[in-house]
Image (spheres, rainbow over the protein chains, first blue to last red):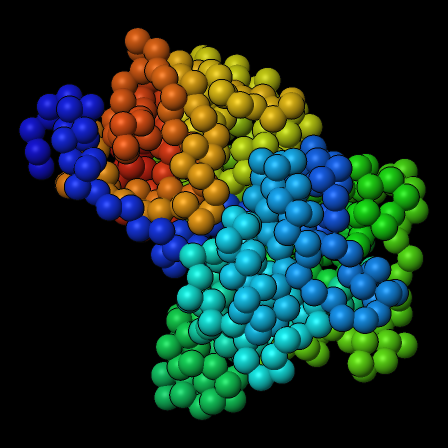
Amino acid sequence: MSSPSTATESTAASAEAQRPETGTARVKRGMAEQLKGGVIMDVVTPEQAKIAEDSGAVAVMALERVPADIRKDGGVARMSDPDMIEGIIEAVSIPVMAKSRIGHIVEAQVLQALGVDYIDESEVLTPADEVNHSDKFAFTTPFVCGATNLGEALRRIAEGAAMIRSKGEAGTGNVVEAVRHMRQIKNEIGKLTVLDNNELYAAAKELRAPYELVKEVSVAGKLPVVLFSAGGVATPADAALMRQLGAEGVFVGSGIFKSGDPAKRAAAIVKATTFYDDPKIIADASRGLGEAMVGINCDTLPETERYATRGW
Amino acid sequence: MSVPTIGVLALQGDVREHLAALKASGANPVQVRRPEELDDVAGLVIPGGESTTISKLAVIFGLMDRLRERVSQGMPAYGSCAGMIMLADKILDPRSGQETIGGIDMIVRRNAFGRQNESFEAALDMPAVPGGPVEGVFIRAPWVESTGAATETLASYDGHPVAVRQRHLLATAFHPELTGDQRVHALFTEMVRSAH
């Protein structure tokens, strides 16, 4: 230990020798750790971004159309206009995320160049590559990816994803698929924790995931990155439900700005996400919110319109 | 007081990592989300997270006044990143309505090192913590723009204070809770012990 000279002296002397390292796994995954317990909201304009920030969102997802409109409009859904993303970056001080198509490495490169804080390689947009996801280690900007089960989550982490969200079925206002995917992931994690070392190799083969990650999950009892929930959260109770099922935070897409009173609903969902285990607070937050977004029954969705099946 | 009960403000942010670091440094960590839960703790950690969100939730759920009261009465507190902002008397560029608990005579600049692409790791000299340099993990981190006479700078990076102490209050712009190195938490736990 060095002798206790004054703090300013000793740090000034060595500060020049310290080379900062950007884009490390710790910095990428650590960024998601800071979002825990929070709500990430889809926004399509700077005004919506400000409403989200004022309501207590921990981050916003900048996109051209919310999933409900992507569903309605059909066609190919792509990365948003850079002007729109920059307008939102200008408007708020919380982190700004944006979506690239699955496997569209150039859209991801553009988003990194724009300075977004997180890239969502998202099944909500039309996939650009039906075999390969992007190599996410090639980027300084961290990535979040969707997953419907543990194997899919671990394959994304193996490609460099620094955060996982259960996929749900975006743009439906129906939480049933979000519940299914979160339960599936948690259930498969639980199973790994009781396997012995001999069994982990076969488990990795079954999960189609790297053995090292399977081993890590079996020891830790959790993913090595933060796990959020997405796809169908429309009410404060939905958000609290996903947290009780094990999500460390929630993405809310169409649920807020497709509802009657977005500012009020946004603030209510934030409250319910923080106090997800306190029904009295959730009850208070749920009062007088006006109309929720119109929901879609997932059973009636044709296979081609299911976003959760995109990604492999 | 050999095992002090230390709260972690659990409105939002990397609460679990702070709880683990406190436990490893010999404290009894508990989560604090409600005003009355503040009464049972001998010290408080304000975690990393989004400072605007933590501030808003603290006001909405009636914690802010009680937090200010306890901090001004001498309850030790440690804030990392967003927590540092919460303990600053003044924010250089606050969002509208963003309040702080205050207590440390300093002005902080939010996201001073840049956006996420500029987030970085670097070793820091921090003589108040024995055992060599501390790993500094800076994530959209603030820095301290200026400090008052009573505020002691414990570490600097690129000419800006990034760890400060003022009597019973400690703040870092970086995240020791993400590194598995508990020395900063041990320093804080010791501050809590000696305050009682």
